[in-house]
Image 1 (cartoon, rainbow, N blue to C red):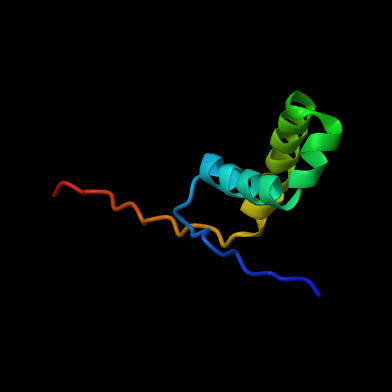
Image 2: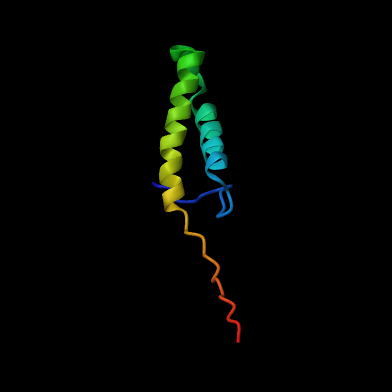
Length: 75
């Protein structure tokens, strides 16, 4: 079952923050993979994966509402 909740991610969360959240979750879930592959390769692959997943998460988040700009008219 697919979980579409963006737990801990709000509209105001930046790209770097989203990537960091994804990176932390991946590191925890793939802890045994770290010992098999090696520390350096593990870190680089996690970083790349977090970046790719982060792009998709950012696209899936609702767009921010732009504020209307009012033009001051001199009479």
